[in-house]
Length: 378
Image 1 (cartoon, rainbow, N blue to C red):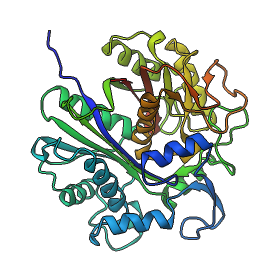
Image 2 (cartoon, rainbow, N blue to C red):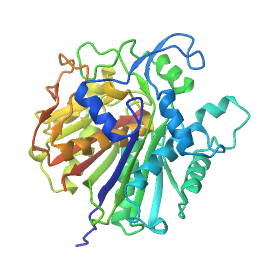
Image 3 (cartoon, rainbow, N blue to C red):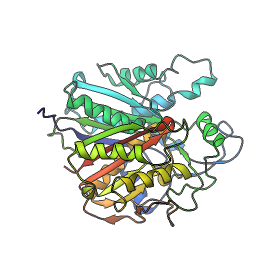
Image 4 (tube, rainbow, N blue to C red):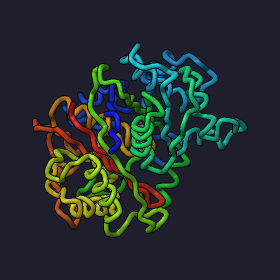
């Protein structure tokens, strides 16, 4: 029987409306502070909209740190997050043995309305970021709707397990754009108020923007943050923009993840759900957790803090789950009051101490895609 090397998360970084470090995000969790607010920006929408947008102070820090005018704002965000994550593990990774994986749904989509179309292909975007940081291997792009971040982490895990590389720099990034906002508005899926995942009064999503990075490594001496144990992806083939009606397909991804990690549902201590606060997503996830034997597991969605950050979501929310593992604290699901799903779920409503050894992170997206990964305490 083949034995795969253990894979660890050795560094994390997040930039969003809540700040430019993981710690600022944890402080927001402690304070119950959301980065979602009402915006008036005619470049994005003719009407005011709720969203989570990186502020001008943070952008000044990004531009002062990433002094390369050839990079687009999207690329600067990603490059900044990657650089900050790499600073924490200087000397621990060899770039010749490192793969860079970019997770995004739309990349430089704002260039579609300009004459600068050379960087619209996601492959060109990834090459520009890789060149900035001096990665010597050909970058990989994972663009699989809202599962992109979790799927990218799983891809990195498998590449390290099969010996292709020793390290993986996995960055998820998406900007707040008119294109994406209009798309979700056309589905009547956006909320005029801060989103409330799994709540009876939820009205839809709030869009957000972020860049988040997790560095994976087989090097256990690099002060690992957590271990990435397993993961799986499935597709429900239900509808291009609507999730499964049964939750069975996400449940299958969860069961496969548990099986590979040699765990049973009772051992899971926390779930970081996708939790978009749309009627259909939250209902589907509740059914999936019920089918997986996880109805009693403490659960939260981080969307109430930063909105839906698309390709960054799975990595950002995983990074916050790793903060929970380290601090042994359950994250609350901001905005939740009364359950609005048909299956019982154990929603965490306040920050509280708990024994956390294993965390499940789930994501689902357009096209019927589902993804799950399991993180373990080191």
